[in-house]
Image (tube, rainbow, N blue to C red; front, top):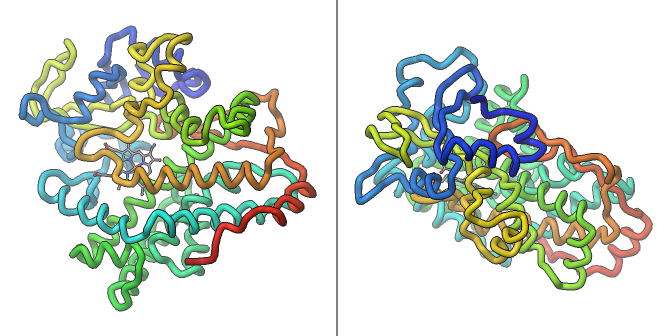
Amino acid sequence: MPLSSQQMLDDPSVFYAGLREYGPVMPIHLDGDVPAWLVTGYDAGCHVLKGSHKGRRLFTRDLGQWGVAAQGQLPPGWPLAPHVAPMENMLFASGDEHVRLRGAFRSSLRRVSSARRKVIIGRAADQLIDSFVDQGSADLVSQYALPLPVAVLTRLFGFPPEEAARLQRVIPTLLAGGEGALDANEELTDVIASHVERRRRTPRGDIVSGLIEAGLTAQETCNTVWLAINAGVGATTAWTANTCVLVARAEDARIDLRTGMTSTPAVMNEVLWNHTPVQQVIGRVATADVDLFNTDVRRGDLLVISVGASNLDEQFGDARTRPRNIVGNESHLSWGLGDHECPAQPEATSIVEGGVNRLWTRLDDLHLSNPEQPTQWNPSIIVRIPTRVDVSFDPVRARARAQTLAPTGDHP
Ligand code: HEM
């Protein structure tokens, strides 16, 4: 059974419900006929992501142990290779090495207080809105949801403005994955390396200085920054864009937001349940032959954890009961689970919340330009993100409103 399909993009709940009829774990073929197991049930997803059972480690994030790859059986130029090729960073590390790298990253994130982070996010959001406000229309994906996390992360990492501007061009090219991606990756790697060198000489109150202070080598610091940008930007862009789509599409949601019947965090939580940014986590490798929910998985097999499917598991209710079951419930798997659970949840949450709030505060009549057209989704099996979100608003009203709004604060 192939995983990529138009129905997965257009109607994930129907698509994943169909898959779950095979049971919570099923054989699939990834692009190029590469065999793997897809974990679609919530309980099975928790089990595999946690990785151990009764004190025994059964699944590892170390994809170097994946039999098909180790035996050189991947097709040349395999499109998913960048997601599975082992790299020297915390995502591919395990045991004490993982604890050390992850600990350094988490402690460095705390170098920027949440108050300062909020100012950075508000100013980045304002600058982006200013760049399109006079046009009365925008594509929220390319002009807002994508450049926003890039602007915030480059600021949190302490990149000087000219390098941050360079990364605004480079990172989207890298994430798009087309022809220019290899060159973009080289440029990103160079910019990171020279910034890490700069901070080794002159530390400041930013995350890169925090990583160095936590004892990481120059190379480990570069790898961590590279991973944070690659893991963080796409997912945060998708979460922002999917939240914007939900608010822009549903007049009820806009009214409820205005009247305080719901809140931006509540809508964001709904997105994590129903349109999670990271649809599939690729993945885990079985470290032993194991009976996984009545499926024989062999040592060295690859498991793809379908977070999208797990979050839509019927155990959270049917069309009638699900909406109230997920309100205020954060037990979805959107951040992963276990040792590798996303370490940047507060940062990502504040970027999306700050970004969405500022957008609807500044452009309070924002609406979809073509509401009758269904949302088109990028044909990725991994990240759920619209290709574009075209919106319109009254620029005169927006400019007048800007005069009356409180500023987002000075540059910290
Ligand atoms: C500021 C933005 C973000 C940054 C810097 C970031 C960074 C990271 C890093 C460094 C890891 C690897 C952790 C480890 O191996 O121990 C990770 C894992 C993960 N992140 Fe994030 N992230 C961000 C936003 C998001 C968002 C918005 C989502 C989705 C809602 C997300 C979902 C995940 C998931 C599912 C994993 C686990 C992968 C696995 O288990 O294999 N992240 N993130």
